[in-house]
Amino acid sequence: MNTWNAGQIMTAVRTINKMDVDYLGPDPSTQDQILFQFMNVALWKLARLCYNTEVSDTVNVTGDGIVPFTKGNAAIKDMYEPLRILQLVDGREIEVPKRYSDTAPIGWHCEAPNQPIDIRGITGQVKMKYIRYPRQVTQAADPVDCPESGYQTLIMEISSSVKYVKNFYAEAEAMGGAAKTGYAGITQAAISARGPSSGGQPPSYDDVQKARGGM
Image (cartoon, rainbow, N blue to C red; front, side, top):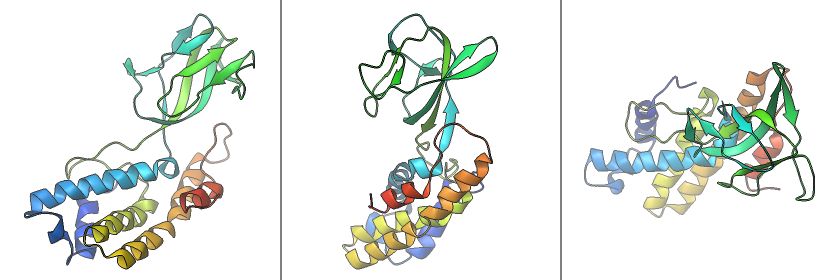
C-alpha cells in the first residue's frame, strides 16, 4: 500500500482533467488545495472498501458501561467501524459477542458513528479491532490510504468532482460510473490480503452493491 503518494495521484488527475483544472482556482497552489479536498472526500467515501484496520490499546474494564478505547494513549477519533472486541484471558484472545439488543446481558454495542462502545457482562483487559477512515491528505508527500488496485477508482472519483465544478454533469456521471467499475477490484484486494483467516467482517461484494447505490 502507499506505492504512490498524494502528489502522484494528483498528477494523474491533472493529466485526465487537463482542460478543466483551471476552473478550480487562479493558480496551481489553489487548484491543488481543492484537489486535495476532493481526494479526501473520495477516500472517506471508499473507507470500508479500502479496509484500513487498527487495534486499540488494551484497556481495563471494571464494570458495565461506556469503555473509552484509545490508540497510542489518545482517544480514537477516526473509527469508521468497530470489528471485534477481544478479551485477554490467560494470554488468549476471546471474542466478546456483539449485543443487538439493549436487554442483552453480555456483549458490546455501538449505536451510531462517533458514538462510544458500551460493554456489559465483561471485566478485565480488552482491546478493539476496527476500521479507520483513510488519513487526510494535505500535501503532495502525504501517503494515500488506498490499495494500489483502487488508484484508478480514486482518480476517477476525484475527476468526477472536477467535472461538477464546470457543471459538466454528463461527464461527471461518466467519471463516477468509471469509478464504480473499480469497486470490485478494491474489495478483492482487501479480501485476498486477509487470506483464509477468520474474524471480523471483511468487505464483500454486497459492499460493492451498496457503494453503487444498491441495497
